[in-house]
Structures are given as structure tokens and as C-alpha cells.
Length: 205
Ligand code: ADP
Ligand code: MG
Ligand code: MG
Image (cartoon, rainbow, N blue to C red; front, side, top):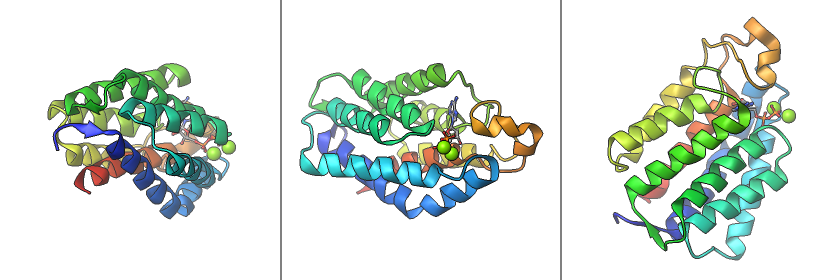
């Protein structure tokens, strides 16, 4: 379908919960190299809470699904990633408005609004070795295709996450390591790529 409804966004969130749970050990391993070894646990706890919340009652609009999920992440994840991903989903959801269906170009634009809000909240930019290094390339690829090519967005996010390896972290806990953060993939960029892959999978499914 060209237009995306609330069920699509709920499927994105449950697919993301599956992916995050499946990859939790890997995310924690990455965070043990340049952080405090809790990213997998943080993400799993947050997205399992989102899954439970949406399992009880799926809100009627795409915007409400993402705002509900974002609020849940903020309230269940203590680490930096909770407020940051919570902001991503709440602000993207708010930008989608109150319609029962949204177009794909509309989603690409709303995601950019949400990602900009993450950048503002965290004071980070592309190249700082954070989730933004996966999120911005993904939304660029999506927007370039008129919101149609979720697979291109997935590939761009994955490449962006891999390209954090040679970077020195300038934000978050990893920045405390200075040059010692070089040579490791950023955990948040890695989880961000999982969320984009879940979006592509929700579309295919
Ligand atoms: P914490 O660092 O509090 O333990 P997590 O381990 O859950 O939180 O998340 C760490 C991830 O959060 C990092 O890998 C990075 O991608 C992301 N992150 C941290 N600080 C920022 C920031 N200021 N802006 C964007 N992303 C950030
Ligand atoms: Mg951590
Ligand atoms: Mg922590």
C-alpha cells in the first residue's frame, strides 16, 4: 500500500522489539568497549515495554502510535538512549499529525523533524559517533527516493553505523575515552540501524 496506517507503525515497533531483543548481547558488547555495557539491556527493556503497551491497545493513528512508543521509551530507559530515542519517536509522531493514514514522503519529512530534535536535544551532529551517524544517512536515502525506498534507507543506516568505527566520539559516555574510542562501532548507531531495518521489514511484511 502507498499510504501507511496505524497498524503499519505498530508493526514497525514490534519488529524493532524483536530485532533489539535478538541483538541485545551484541549491543551490550559494543557498549562494553566504549561505554558502560548496558545498551542492549536498555534497548530491550524499552522496546519490550513498547511492545506490551501496543499489545494492549493500538492507538488509532500513526502519529499516536509513535508518540505512545516514545513516551514509553522515555519512562522505561534510564540511559542516554531513552530520552534520545523517545524524542525521535515522539517528535516524528507529532510531525505526522492526526490523520489515520500518512504518505511516504510525509513519513520521510516527519522522520527528519524527529532526527533534528534528537540532534538538538543531544547537541550532537553527524560525525560525532552517535546514533545520528546512522539516522541521517537513512533519512537522506529515504527522502531522495520520495519516501519509497525503505531498503535504501536500511542500507544507508547500516553503512553509517559501520562508518562510526574510525571516528572519535565527541558526545556521550564514549567521548570520555577520547582517542581510545577510535576503532569501535558505536552502539547507538548500531541500534539505530536495527530500527531502520525494522522499518524496512515492516514494509515488506
Ligand atoms: P548510556 O550512555 O547512558 O549508558 P546507552 O548505552 O543506552 O546510554 O546509549 C549510548 C548511545 O547513545 C551511544 O552509543 C550514542 O549512539 C548515543 N548517544 C549518547 N549521547 C548522545 C548524544 N548527545 N546525541 C546523540 N546520541 C547520543
Ligand atoms: Mg551505555
Ligand atoms: Mg548507562
